Length: 493
Image 1: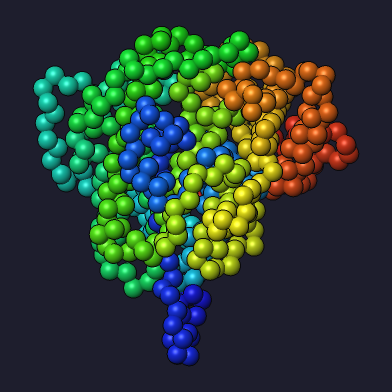
Image 2: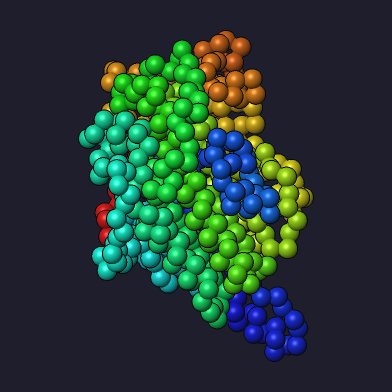
């Protein structure tokens, strides 16, 4: 309650204080940077685009892990996945971990989450209230669904990795078996609208987390003809890609690949419509001028680039995600090209609200960029994916991808080929933005590979939660192989 008590003290002293700002954070699952209409003419996202026009869009914002749970718990706490001990999809956020909800709640805010949080438990983690799919399912049981138009085929039950990829990735571009107002995300959005329309005695921290456009890329029957599959381009697959393409994607035809992309972008447009409903409700409530609005995905997503239809790797499309921040009263700013990590969002929001940052937060506030006082933020970003024991270091021009090549991955994306052993990729992102030519073995880049490998090792060592057994000495390869292993030992609560 420290924030509210400070405001009361100001009133007693006869000084005027502005009302603390609200925070509205909207997240769309698997929503890649390239799924924004403002950067890609293949998709229409007018509501997300209007946010970009109102605030600042970060065009080089990187998740800290290309998998839902690890990324979400990382940006909610402002800590690296390995520091939390949450690097795998099924790992629950440990009980007692401080989140942004704790920080805002103790400052006198209402804290509410609506939609997908990926806590992997029923714990509240600092939120006063949570609404999710279980609540939607209860509501739908009491409602009567309308019959669908005659002859409209709909998606089958989602059976990832059991059905062929063309089916669970919806290459036929089939709608979900419901109208827009019956969709899960639309229902969750309606709960957010009701929340925003209601009275609030305190400032609020509200997270609205949509389930789309995650596969099978659900969208309502009204959206079934919005995007034509034949208009989708086929991304280039380079000569160096064969060894890393997961087996499950290898038999997809060109037409199926186009259908998958069209289904994904259609689902993204459905997500955008729900973003618009939330923004319209905020405006109608009269709180726009005192609310910080953030829009993000949780990581990126690949639509055929390098032969993949997923995240779970270190190519740009998998690790870059949208990040837009709108500050009340601030002038719109041109898109930022500064390197940003998603763990930077949490300290930024606390700074914007005048609150102290959590002592365990490892992110760096973006306030300097938002104020226009700095043009750059980080000299490098780090991303990790423990399931494949893979790490990335990205500077302004160069990207290093390091893999141990020793783990039989269990996430369904096996290549069907023998384990390769240590792999190092070096890409010149200025002259090879598609990441097609690995320069790591070139003699002229030997020193660069050495220094970037060392920097990645140092960063992972510094952010490790567990230090017992960590190798000592100067062998960075031994250190990296140890650091990249998952040490999620937390039992589900």
